[in-house]
Image (cartoon, rainbow, N blue to C red; front, side, top):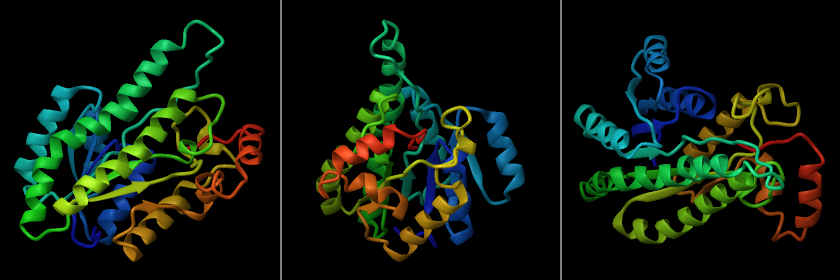
Amino acid sequence: MDITRSTVFVPGATSGIGLALALRLQARGSTVIVGGRRTALLDEIVAAHPGIDAVRIDTDDPDSIDTARREVLERHPALDAVVAMAGIMRPEDWTADDFLATAERTVVTNLLGPIRLAAAFLPHLRTRAGSGGSPAFVTVSSGLAHVPLAATPTYNATKAAIHRLSEGIRLQLEPAGVQVIEIVPPAVRTAIVPGHEENPVAMPLDEFTDEVVELLATRPDAHEILVDGVKFLRFAETSGAYDATVARLNATDAHAA
């Protein structure tokens, strides 16, 4: 993925990591289309950042994904990267009787959403590979794919699924010329959970996105984008520190994006 000349669609980019990443990709030379459910926010982003385009999309809704695909490709036929950024993080208590609705919605947003985005955009990305481009499908997992946070079991599970899905589809898509890149955030100061913007143990948003973009720039063929702050989670099991890392994570107020 060449971030100096890509055309990138980022569903889930009206705030937080998605918006910060979109702005940095634009600053590096990419043409960027942000996506989200709230048209008022999309209009504000377009007005505040000349050159960025916006398309409404609700990744929980297959019809909305299809409509957005047609709109994005009509306006940006040179699209060669999609970043499946949209996600939610909700606490659940599996000792109570009311966790199912939250768990189901988490699966739909965090797992079915990226799968549906892939189904919608991969046919086009494969044509870009055939025309000599360097297309990419970018997933977003989490450090919690590797070490669980007790408060968010379904979130952990969906991010573990995204990690393994990324590993699997890479085996199929790279021979077809489509790169699969997995961004793995640690705890980052965003509004993914209430009050998390002030979490002192979370990584500052600007610091995280600056490091991600630098890694994308210097390692364009990378399979995983791992900032330093997530490596203690990513490699906890292989380093023999899994039990200690689970205890450390759940003894703090840390939450991973």
